[in-house]
Image (cartoon, rainbow, N blue to C red):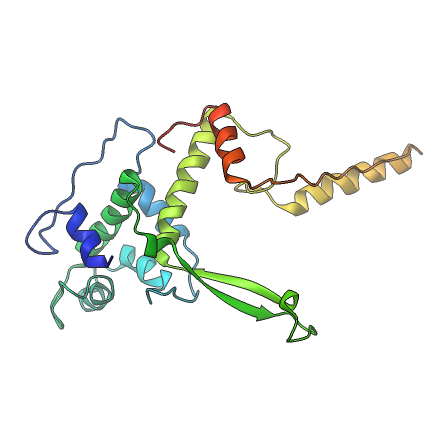
Amino acid sequence: ETWSEVICEHFTGNSLIQRTIPEIDESNEYSASMEDAKIVIRSLNRNKAAGHDGLPADVLVFTKAASDLETFSSEIAQLLFPWEIPRNSKFDGCTLQRLTLQVMCRLYNTGKIPQWMLQSMIYPILKPGKPIGDVDSYRLLAVGTSFGQAVRGLLKYKLESWEQKYNILNEQQYGFRHGRRVEQVLFQIDTMLALQRQAKKPTWLVTVDVRQAYNHEIAMQRFHDIGMPDEL
């Protein structure tokens, strides 16, 4: 699949600027809206390497600020949609932003995300002081596509919104949560230890390594058990 096929499948119209997309069902709280997409775009990490599609996240981030930069917007449009934008043509940044956000929402809401968009390139990084010939000496770095990252970001954003609305997670869970850091847990443990020492009481620390914590089937069953909507 190519970008051209993605656009042709989800949009209608004879040219890129004229293309339209079916309206988003605002009554469905689990559908991604244009505003959701804007929030996710703003949160993308910039100054990162591009994936195998050659499109860095900076390009998507800059679309939100490109409305007054017609020449710059046209250059971005050449990167995103080169098959439909003639070189040196004028392209309004607002149109570019609208199209970018619509593509994100459409891919998320239909679930028809091209496989190539979700694929990552794996780069082995040698750990300092480790032998080159040992496979365990390398840290694997995955570099994915920016649009794939954006669509994943939409899913994460909608999941977090759902969790916060229905208060699903335990208050003591810090991992994989927005605004929570490991330093907070360490501070709590350090404070608890200090109070125990002051009271001259013993302290025991129990750690648990959960087997198959990221097993897909187990995770999906758990999602079902806690009432996660099928849309998510």
